[in-house]
Amino acid sequence: MYYNGVVTIVTVGSLTLPADLSHVVLELRASNAAAVLILEVTGSDPPIEPNVIFNSESYVIEVEEGQTGTVGQVEAIADNGESVTYSLRLDNEHLQSRLSITNDGELRLSASADIGSYNFQVIATTVFTGTNGATTVYLSVYETTLCENNVGIPPLVVIDRDEEEPHHDLVTINPVLHAGCHYNLKNIWPIDQQWLYVDETGLHTYAIDREHPSIAFMALSQIKVELKLHCNTETRTKRSARQDWLGSYDYGDNTWLLGNTIEYDRKTTIVNLIVNDINDNAPIFVGKENEPIAIGYPVPDLISSISPRSLIELKATDADIGENAALMYWSTESQLAVSSSTGFVHVRNDAQLIQDMQLVVSATDLNGQGLTGTISLIIKLLDINNIAVLTVENAFLEDESIILSNLSSAVGYDVKALKSVVVSNSEEQAINTYNRGKRDVNSNGHSLQIHVYGLLQREPVLVEKLSE
Image 1 (tube, rainbow, N blue to C red):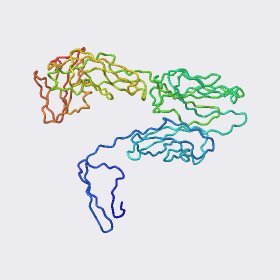
Image 2 (cartoon, rainbow, N blue to C red):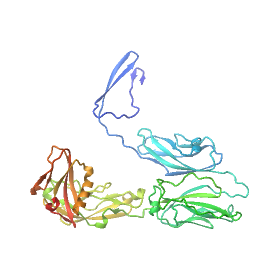
Image 3 (cartoon, one colour):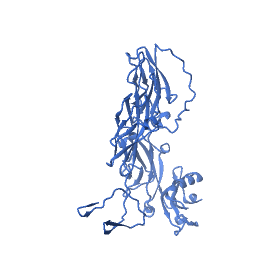
């Protein structure tokens, strides 16, 4: 930009340049004047994508028939402070022609919507990095007045309750407006659920286990039922049994809120009960059933030549979700340093490990503030008679786990790695057994070189057996 005799150059976005480009030459022209600007290209780290989070996992909006203008508002933030813009993801053609969203997150109807229930997504996108976040909106359009002698109920009810305790009066029958009426309940998902039930006062639920397989797989665990209001003044008709329900635990790709477009019926309510997770499951380490877990580690004389990348990488799982399943790894053992986020366990520089020493590592959920699980490790010291160097042609570091798994299956006992490195085809390829000799292997490319040891019934295997 030009102002008061000064030309200022500003950036308006990001650009990916070729890796071998060192300079960018710009020619600046103003009338008959010209100049050349040379920009030096220096390396920089790619921008870290932020998390875009809405202030609610879902929104429920109810509007009267005929209402237009602003009907609701959503809000999202990026954790790096970036501004966000909003857009709609609509499948319903009727809503597409009349629903819009502003840059402030206001949802607006330009014309009245038909009576019924709708669902759609709002997408928030960061201005600079282009990172997206999404939320689901449930819009119910209800009739403002009732015909004489008719009793109406909302077409959609979305509520949430904590698991592991009963809840009463999820949906109640109004004793004045609905005198002499009762609900009939039909399961929609899961089709065989027995938690929700109705009586003369309304809809209730027994204690729900969120970790039940029928709802645990969902991104937002929930139960969906249909309530049909019947009154004494009505003539009841027997409903034929439906044959088109989905099979057990099969809801296709829909693992989010179960809210498809609902055709309006003044006597029918669809209820989505979202089951909130509570922290009722402690972390469980992978391999816990085989503890103590035997781990090989070189004797002190070999540490300088074979420095293991870690003692072990541990993984734990938690049946809860969200923050209740956010794990922090740790240990009170003075010999160990544990990565709190990855589960890598390292031996401290000044620590001394001894044969058959047992060490305990823990994992605590709720980011270290919740329930704790533990696993016990037993140390097996390795000397040159227990360690071999395995070289695999045309393999990379990411192939290591598959290689060791296949090798363990072939030999019938556990083969584990102390360290690994990728070497070029100019380096010698061999299975080196230290003072036991080596076997040459031809290679036409790079190779993965792994220092390995074997464990049979928790005891180290001699290298002769490992090399067979």
